[in-house]
Length: 111
Length: 114
Image 1 (cartoon, rainbow over the protein chains, first blue to last red):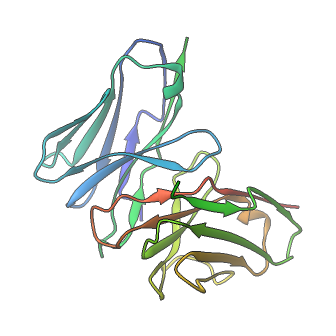
Image 2: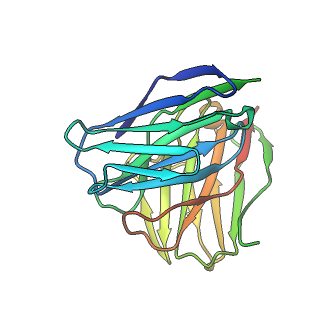
């Protein structure tokens, strides 16, 4: 069963703008991961945030986690055309042995 | 570079004709996963191997089978592909199966069923 739901489904912005994507999930988690998928390619891990963390940074990426609201957000600052991709949040399945991915947000950055 | 390799990148098969997709890894990871991803959808886990232990998701059709002859290789067999099986098939690995491990994905095999 699906755990994460991303919002919005699609986002179009100009280069240099910030992009914010949100993920909501249903059950308690130990951690949450974000992945990027370029068109027709495999997924690439971006960042992992643990349930006891509220915010995490990696380069131009900022991830927040609000366990009380069961939600996470991914902020990409100063976006570039190369950031054009689909972004997925993922949480563990009940057994903690595999990931369940949300539907993803498709980001389009135009120059 | 250590990586996850999938072959072929594109596979065309006929309705009902068995097909095998392959995945290999040089990361020496214990866990290997197979996902199915249909257009504009989330990757959906089909099954995974923790070492030699096979773990099938409850809703994975019997039409899908997998083999892992050794640590490096894992195969996805579709016994009788239907039109609904056309999708991108993603292989991924993880050092261990425990919570919080990053997964490393191959580039995927896009399957077309005629």
